[in-house]
Length: 71
Image 1 (cartoon, one colour):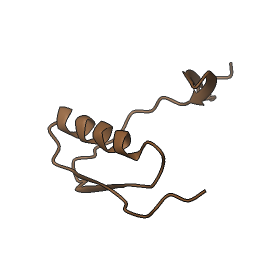
Image 2 (cartoon, one colour; image 1 turned 120 degrees about the vertical axis):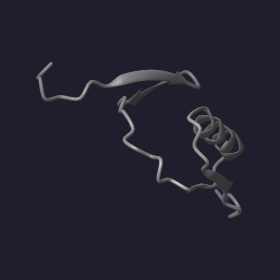
Image 3 (cartoon, one colour; image 1 turned 90 degrees about the vertical axis):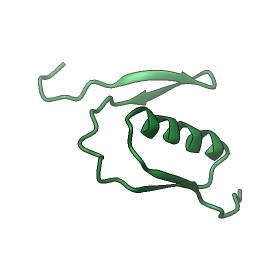
Image 4 (cartoon, helix red, strand yellow; image 1 turned 180 degrees about the vertical axis):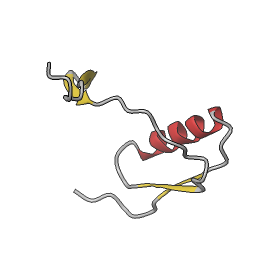
């Protein structure tokens, strides 16, 4: 693997390998509000973000968009 390449990791979701790149977040203490877009599991995304911010003692409002999901 070349020195300047980014290592790709994989996780499994619904029996499919999903590639991802692990990154460190910078300073997010200035973040005040996050809006979660419409998708099938947006309720879970909202709960996950609230837990993430709470575990880091950050007061960030997380809201789910009320736009209806269409296919």
